Image 1 (cartoon, rainbow, N blue to C red):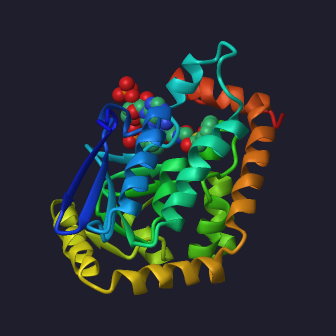
Image 2: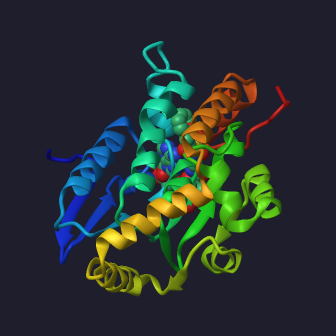
Length: 263
Ligand code: LHQ
Protein backbone atom coordinates (compact mmCIF):
# COMPACT_ATOMS: atom_id res chain seq x y z
CA UNK A 1 0.00 0.00 0.00
CA UNK A 2 1.41 3.41 -0.98
CA UNK A 3 0.96 5.90 1.83
CA UNK A 4 -0.08 9.56 1.61
CA UNK A 5 0.22 10.70 5.20
CA UNK A 6 3.03 8.61 6.67
CA UNK A 7 6.53 7.57 5.64
CA UNK A 8 7.69 4.02 6.23
CA UNK A 9 11.25 2.73 6.19
CA UNK A 10 12.85 -0.47 7.51
CA UNK A 11 16.59 -0.55 8.31
CA UNK A 12 18.39 -3.22 10.36
CA UNK A 13 15.14 -4.78 11.61
CA UNK A 14 13.76 -1.38 12.71
CA UNK A 15 10.61 -0.04 11.06
CA UNK A 16 10.37 3.75 11.32
CA UNK A 17 6.94 5.27 10.74
CA UNK A 18 6.96 9.05 10.32
CA UNK A 19 3.72 11.00 10.56
CA UNK A 20 3.98 13.29 7.58
CA UNK A 21 1.59 16.25 7.62
CA UNK A 22 4.08 18.79 8.98
CA UNK A 23 2.05 21.89 8.01
CA UNK A 24 -0.55 20.95 10.65
CA UNK A 25 1.90 19.42 13.15
CA UNK A 26 0.95 15.95 11.82
CA UNK A 27 -2.69 16.24 12.87
CA UNK A 28 -4.51 12.95 12.38
CA UNK A 29 -6.95 12.24 9.54
CA UNK A 30 -8.92 9.09 8.78
CA UNK A 31 -6.38 8.32 6.05
CA UNK A 32 -3.53 8.56 8.56
CA UNK A 33 -5.34 6.22 10.97
CA UNK A 34 -5.88 3.68 8.18
CA UNK A 35 -2.29 3.95 6.99
CA UNK A 36 -0.86 3.50 10.48
CA UNK A 37 -3.08 0.46 10.97
CA UNK A 38 -1.94 -1.00 7.68
CA UNK A 39 1.74 -0.40 8.40
CA UNK A 40 1.51 -1.92 11.88
CA UNK A 41 -0.53 -4.89 10.64
CA UNK A 42 2.21 -5.62 8.09
CA UNK A 43 4.91 -5.16 10.73
CA UNK A 44 3.14 -7.59 13.03
CA UNK A 45 3.32 -10.29 10.35
CA UNK A 46 6.82 -9.46 9.14
CA UNK A 47 9.47 -11.33 11.14
CA UNK A 48 12.14 -9.07 9.67
CA UNK A 49 10.68 -6.15 11.66
CA UNK A 50 11.81 -6.52 15.26
CA UNK A 51 11.34 -3.00 16.62
CA UNK A 52 9.14 -0.06 15.58
CA UNK A 53 9.80 3.68 15.89
CA UNK A 54 7.03 6.28 15.62
CA UNK A 55 8.00 9.90 14.99
CA UNK A 56 6.78 13.07 13.28
CA UNK A 57 8.02 15.15 10.35
CA UNK A 58 8.80 18.82 10.93
CA UNK A 59 8.45 20.65 14.23
CA UNK A 60 5.59 18.59 15.68
CA UNK A 61 5.16 14.99 16.76
CA UNK A 62 1.36 14.93 16.40
CA UNK A 63 -1.36 17.52 17.17
CA UNK A 64 -4.12 14.91 17.62
CA UNK A 65 -7.30 14.84 15.60
CA UNK A 66 -7.26 17.21 12.60
CA UNK A 67 -9.92 19.65 13.73
CA UNK A 68 -10.30 21.04 10.21
CA UNK A 69 -11.04 17.59 8.83
CA UNK A 70 -13.86 17.01 11.31
CA UNK A 71 -15.23 20.51 10.91
CA UNK A 72 -15.14 20.26 7.11
CA UNK A 73 -17.29 17.14 7.28
CA UNK A 74 -19.84 18.79 9.58
CA UNK A 75 -22.60 18.40 7.05
CA UNK A 76 -24.13 15.21 8.39
CA UNK A 77 -21.75 12.77 6.73
CA UNK A 78 -19.49 13.03 9.76
CA UNK A 79 -19.53 10.01 12.08
CA UNK A 80 -20.12 10.62 15.78
CA UNK A 81 -17.08 11.22 17.94
CA UNK A 82 -17.72 7.96 19.81
CA UNK A 83 -17.82 5.99 16.57
CA UNK A 84 -14.77 7.81 15.28
CA UNK A 85 -12.85 6.62 18.33
CA UNK A 86 -14.25 3.07 18.22
CA UNK A 87 -13.40 2.58 14.55
CA UNK A 88 -10.28 4.73 14.18
CA UNK A 89 -8.21 5.56 17.24
CA UNK A 90 -9.08 2.67 19.56
CA UNK A 91 -8.06 -0.11 17.16
CA UNK A 92 -4.78 1.74 16.57
CA UNK A 93 -4.05 1.94 20.30
CA UNK A 94 -4.97 -1.75 20.63
CA UNK A 95 -2.58 -2.56 17.79
CA UNK A 96 0.31 -0.61 19.39
CA UNK A 97 -0.26 -2.36 22.72
CA UNK A 98 -0.93 -5.75 21.12
CA UNK A 99 2.02 -5.96 18.74
CA UNK A 100 4.59 -8.18 20.41
CA UNK A 101 7.57 -6.07 19.43
CA UNK A 102 8.88 -2.94 21.17
CA UNK A 103 7.38 0.34 19.96
CA UNK A 104 9.38 3.50 20.66
CA UNK A 105 8.03 7.03 20.21
CA UNK A 106 10.72 9.49 19.13
CA UNK A 107 8.93 12.63 20.28
CA UNK A 108 10.42 15.37 18.13
CA UNK A 109 8.05 18.20 19.04
CA UNK A 110 4.61 18.92 20.43
CA UNK A 111 2.39 15.91 21.14
CA UNK A 112 -1.19 17.06 21.76
CA UNK A 113 -4.55 15.42 22.36
CA UNK A 114 -4.75 11.97 20.81
CA UNK A 115 -1.20 12.64 19.50
CA UNK A 116 0.08 12.76 23.07
CA UNK A 117 -1.78 9.61 23.99
CA UNK A 118 -0.53 7.70 20.95
CA UNK A 119 2.98 8.48 22.22
CA UNK A 120 1.95 7.24 25.68
CA UNK A 121 0.60 4.02 24.15
CA UNK A 122 4.12 3.19 22.95
CA UNK A 123 6.43 1.17 25.20
CA UNK A 124 9.21 3.74 25.43
CA UNK A 125 9.51 7.46 24.68
CA UNK A 126 12.66 9.35 23.76
CA UNK A 127 12.05 13.09 23.68
CA UNK A 128 13.94 15.81 21.95
CA UNK A 129 14.61 18.94 24.03
CA UNK A 130 11.98 20.58 21.81
CA UNK A 131 9.27 18.03 22.70
CA UNK A 132 6.20 18.93 24.72
CA UNK A 133 3.01 17.18 25.82
CA UNK A 134 -0.48 18.69 26.02
CA UNK A 135 -3.67 16.93 27.10
CA UNK A 136 -5.39 19.42 24.81
CA UNK A 137 -8.82 17.80 25.02
CA UNK A 138 -10.23 20.05 27.76
CA UNK A 139 -9.45 23.12 25.66
CA UNK A 140 -12.07 21.91 23.19
CA UNK A 141 -14.45 20.57 25.82
CA UNK A 142 -13.42 16.92 25.47
CA UNK A 143 -12.01 14.15 27.68
CA UNK A 144 -8.69 12.34 27.22
CA UNK A 145 -9.08 9.47 24.76
CA UNK A 146 -6.88 6.99 22.88
CA UNK A 147 -6.08 5.29 26.18
CA UNK A 148 -5.06 8.49 27.99
CA UNK A 149 -7.31 7.75 30.96
CA UNK A 150 -5.17 4.72 31.78
CA UNK A 151 -1.72 5.55 30.32
CA UNK A 152 -1.43 9.00 31.90
CA UNK A 153 -2.23 8.07 35.54
CA UNK A 154 -0.21 4.88 35.14
CA UNK A 155 2.86 6.91 34.17
CA UNK A 156 2.57 10.03 36.34
CA UNK A 157 0.12 9.10 39.14
CA UNK A 158 -3.45 10.27 39.55
CA UNK A 159 -2.86 13.74 41.02
CA UNK A 160 -0.59 14.88 38.20
CA UNK A 161 -2.75 13.14 35.59
CA UNK A 162 -5.80 15.00 36.86
CA UNK A 163 -3.89 18.29 36.82
CA UNK A 164 -2.67 17.79 33.26
CA UNK A 165 -6.06 16.57 31.98
CA UNK A 166 -8.14 19.22 33.78
CA UNK A 167 -5.93 22.20 32.88
CA UNK A 168 -4.65 21.20 29.43
CA UNK A 169 -1.32 22.80 30.41
CA UNK A 170 1.59 22.14 28.07
CA UNK A 171 4.68 20.59 29.69
CA UNK A 172 8.16 20.58 28.22
CA UNK A 173 10.67 17.78 27.79
CA UNK A 174 12.51 18.20 31.10
CA UNK A 175 9.26 18.30 33.09
CA UNK A 176 8.07 15.22 31.17
CA UNK A 177 11.25 13.42 32.15
CA UNK A 178 10.85 14.46 35.79
CA UNK A 179 7.28 13.12 35.79
CA UNK A 180 8.26 9.80 34.23
CA UNK A 181 6.35 10.48 31.04
CA UNK A 182 9.47 9.93 28.90
CA UNK A 183 12.52 7.70 29.27
CA UNK A 184 15.15 10.12 28.08
CA UNK A 185 15.63 13.66 26.74
CA UNK A 186 18.24 14.36 24.08
CA UNK A 187 19.22 17.37 21.95
CA UNK A 188 17.00 17.69 18.90
CA UNK A 189 19.87 16.95 16.54
CA UNK A 190 20.57 13.64 18.32
CA UNK A 191 16.97 12.39 18.55
CA UNK A 192 16.84 9.99 15.62
CA UNK A 193 20.38 8.73 16.09
CA UNK A 194 19.78 7.99 19.79
CA UNK A 195 16.43 6.37 19.05
CA UNK A 196 17.88 4.21 16.29
CA UNK A 197 20.76 3.12 18.50
CA UNK A 198 18.25 1.88 21.10
CA UNK A 199 15.93 0.41 18.47
CA UNK A 200 18.66 -1.56 16.71
CA UNK A 201 19.88 -2.80 20.08
CA UNK A 202 16.37 -4.01 20.96
CA UNK A 203 15.95 -5.49 17.46
CA UNK A 204 19.00 -7.69 18.07
CA UNK A 205 17.68 -9.03 21.40
CA UNK A 206 15.36 -12.05 21.74
CA UNK A 207 12.24 -10.59 20.10
CA UNK A 208 9.95 -13.38 21.26
CA UNK A 209 10.94 -12.87 24.91
CA UNK A 210 10.45 -9.11 24.62
CA UNK A 211 7.06 -9.67 23.00
CA UNK A 212 5.95 -12.03 25.76
CA UNK A 213 7.21 -9.54 28.36
CA UNK A 214 5.06 -6.87 26.73
CA UNK A 215 2.08 -9.20 26.74
CA UNK A 216 2.61 -9.86 30.47
CA UNK A 217 2.96 -6.13 31.23
CA UNK A 218 -0.30 -5.53 29.36
CA UNK A 219 -2.02 -8.14 31.48
CA UNK A 220 -0.52 -6.83 34.72
CA UNK A 221 -0.97 -3.09 34.13
CA UNK A 222 -4.00 -2.70 31.85
CA UNK A 223 -5.95 -5.96 31.71
CA UNK A 224 -9.18 -4.14 30.83
CA UNK A 225 -7.79 -1.83 28.14
CA UNK A 226 -10.52 -2.74 25.64
CA UNK A 227 -13.26 -1.79 28.10
CA UNK A 228 -11.42 1.42 29.04
CA UNK A 229 -11.14 2.48 25.39
CA UNK A 230 -14.82 1.76 24.88
CA UNK A 231 -15.74 3.77 27.97
CA UNK A 232 -13.60 6.69 26.81
CA UNK A 233 -15.59 6.64 23.56
CA UNK A 234 -18.83 6.83 25.59
CA UNK A 235 -17.51 9.78 27.64
CA UNK A 236 -16.19 11.52 24.53
CA UNK A 237 -19.55 11.12 22.84
CA UNK A 238 -21.22 12.86 25.81
CA UNK A 239 -18.59 15.62 25.91
CA UNK A 240 -18.83 16.15 22.15
CA UNK A 241 -22.53 17.04 22.48
CA UNK A 242 -21.82 20.04 24.74
CA UNK A 243 -21.86 23.63 23.56
CA UNK A 244 -18.43 24.00 25.19
CA UNK A 245 -17.06 21.49 22.67
CA UNK A 246 -18.59 23.37 19.75
CA UNK A 247 -17.22 26.64 21.15
CA UNK A 248 -13.76 25.17 21.81
CA UNK A 249 -13.35 23.87 18.26
CA UNK A 250 -14.74 27.09 16.74
CA UNK A 251 -12.36 29.19 18.85
CA UNK A 252 -9.36 27.05 17.81
CA UNK A 253 -10.21 27.28 14.12
CA UNK A 254 -10.93 31.02 14.38
CA UNK A 255 -7.73 31.54 16.44
CA UNK A 256 -9.52 33.24 19.32
CA UNK A 257 -9.92 32.66 23.05
CA UNK A 258 -12.94 30.43 23.82
CA UNK A 259 -15.71 31.35 26.25
CA UNK A 260 -16.92 28.27 28.14
CA UNK A 261 -20.23 28.17 29.98
CA UNK A 262 -20.10 24.70 31.55
CA UNK A 263 -22.80 23.40 29.22
C1 LHQ B 1 -3.99 22.01 13.49
C2 LHQ B 1 -4.14 21.20 14.62
C3 LHQ B 1 -5.20 20.28 14.66
C4 LHQ B 1 -5.83 21.03 12.57
C5 LHQ B 1 -2.41 22.47 14.93
N1 LHQ B 1 -6.03 20.24 13.60
N2 LHQ B 1 -4.84 21.92 12.48
C6 LHQ B 1 -10.73 12.11 18.41
C7 LHQ B 1 -11.89 11.82 17.65
C8 LHQ B 1 -12.84 12.75 17.28
C9 LHQ B 1 -12.93 14.00 17.57
C10 LHQ B 1 -12.13 14.75 18.35
O1 LHQ B 1 -10.96 14.35 18.93
C11 LHQ B 1 -10.31 13.22 18.98
C12 LHQ B 1 -9.08 13.21 19.72
C13 LHQ B 1 -8.26 14.47 19.76
O2 LHQ B 1 -7.12 14.46 19.41
S1 LHQ B 1 -8.98 15.89 20.36
C14 LHQ B 1 -7.62 17.04 20.42
C15 LHQ B 1 -7.32 17.62 19.08
N3 LHQ B 1 -6.13 18.43 19.14
C16 LHQ B 1 -6.10 19.63 19.70
O3 LHQ B 1 -7.06 20.14 20.22
C17 LHQ B 1 -4.79 20.38 19.58
C18 LHQ B 1 -4.96 21.61 18.76
N4 LHQ B 1 -3.68 22.28 18.57
C19 LHQ B 1 -3.12 23.05 19.49
O4 LHQ B 1 -3.60 23.22 20.59
C20 LHQ B 1 -1.83 23.70 19.12
O5 LHQ B 1 -1.74 23.75 17.72
C21 LHQ B 1 -0.58 22.96 19.67
C22 LHQ B 1 -0.55 23.10 21.21
C23 LHQ B 1 -0.60 21.48 19.28
C24 LHQ B 1 0.69 23.57 19.08
O6 LHQ B 1 0.66 24.97 19.24
P1 LHQ B 1 1.70 25.89 18.41
O7 LHQ B 1 3.08 25.33 18.57
O8 LHQ B 1 1.45 27.30 18.87
O9 LHQ B 1 1.30 25.71 16.88
P2 LHQ B 1 0.04 26.32 16.10
O10 LHQ B 1 -1.17 26.29 16.98
O11 LHQ B 1 0.42 27.62 15.50
O12 LHQ B 1 -0.18 25.21 14.95
C25 LHQ B 1 0.57 25.23 13.73
C26 LHQ B 1 -0.40 24.95 12.61
O13 LHQ B 1 -0.96 23.65 12.78
C27 LHQ B 1 -1.58 25.93 12.64
O14 LHQ B 1 -1.97 26.15 11.30
P3 LHQ B 1 -1.57 27.53 10.55
O15 LHQ B 1 -2.25 27.44 9.21
O16 LHQ B 1 -2.05 28.68 11.40
O17 LHQ B 1 -0.06 27.49 10.45
C28 LHQ B 1 -2.66 25.16 13.33
O18 LHQ B 1 -3.95 25.57 13.00
C29 LHQ B 1 -2.39 23.75 12.82
N5 LHQ B 1 -2.90 22.75 13.76
N6 LHQ B 1 -3.14 21.47 15.53
N7 LHQ B 1 -5.37 19.43 15.74
